[in-house]
Structure formats: structure tokens, C-alpha cells
Image (tube, rainbow, N blue to C red; front, top):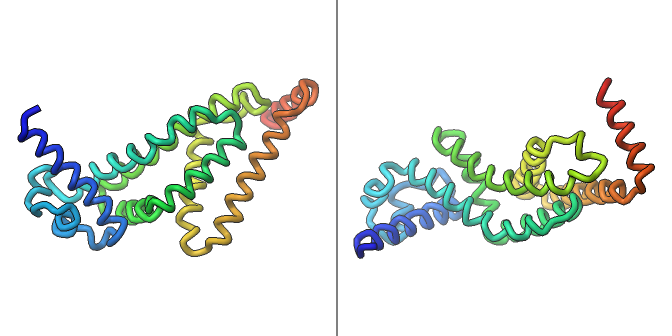
Amino acid sequence: MSPETAKSQETKAKLLEGALRTLTEQGIAKTSARTVAATAGVNQALVFYHFGSVDELLVAACHYGAERAVAPYRERFAEVTSLSELLTVGRQIHEEERAGGHVALLGQLLAGAQTHDTLGPATAAGLHLWISEIEKVLTRVLADTPFGEFTDPAGLARAVAASFVGIELYEGVDAAGATAALDALEQLGALVAALEDLGPVAQRAVRHHLRRTGRR
């Protein structure tokens, strides 16, 4: 790799980091080529040289930030063996993401998606990285339970992700309510775990009931 290419990659990384920091600290309304460049410590013209526009920089930053956020948790997701454990891990991730400022960043990206046409698909793609990991876990842990043949892991993964996104944003106005919602999700996981521990006769009865209900 030539020195020029290495320097170019370094500058782009600074701009991506600067865009994420600016969104988190100043909000979407104050995110501009000037504020991002100032945060990144580079010339404002480099925003347009490397990305073409501020919107394209924000799209790239969204993908960059999402992949960087999800990557450290992939191994943890791979070790999950039950729905209740998935919800517990989700709560831990929620606490870590909030402490790292990523919840505030998500709020700004969702707000920006209302006025920046390119930011909506980019934010959705970033969220899909989380959804994909959750779907893998659900497919694995529900396969041998009474619920395996009656659930849609892809849809359920989106429901779980949407629940956590909603709770993260809701927490800003009602922290106690958000905590209660997280507690309720964990209780739901515990109920599912209790059903998973039933003997084969009871599990057959649950499957029979679900099949009969599904035909109505």
C-alpha cells in the first residue's frame, strides 16, 4: 500500500469517526461538513473529496458504526443457548451501548432518516446487522422446543430488535418505565424456559394445542 493510499484511508477513518461523534454530541441538526471536519481535525474540503456529500458521508458512517458496534458481540451471541439467555444478553448489550453513547447516536440517525432520504436505508441496514445475529440465535435455540415449528425466526428477530430500539429511545423520557419493560421481557423469557423444561408428554400437549389454535 502506497503512503498516499494509507494517508487517504486514515483521513476517511477520521471523517467517519468525526461524523459519528458529531451526530452523538451535537445532533443531526448541527451535523455539517464544517462540524464534522472540525471534529475530525481535517480540512472541510476533504468531506467532499472522499465522500461527495455530507449525506454520503453519513451513510458510510452509519455502516461503519454499525459493523463496529455489532462485531464485539458476535461471539457472545454464538454462545447463547436459550431465549431467556438471549434476553439477558440483550439487556447487557443495552447497558453497554447506552454507556458508550450508541443509544444517543441511534436516536439521531432515526431522527435524521426523516429528512435525509439516504439515511433511512442506511440506518435500516445497520439495524439489520443486529437482526441477523438475533435471527441466528432464535433459529438455533427454538428448533428443539415446542415453539420451533410455530415461530418465524426472521419476523421474531425484528420484533425483538424493534422492542429494544423502542425501549432505548423510551428510556430517555421514562427510565423507570424502560427498566420495567426490560424486566417484563426477561420474565417472558423465563416463562418460555419453563415450558422448555417440561417433559416430552407435556411438550406434545403444548404442540397439539398450538397446532389446534393455528388452524382456527
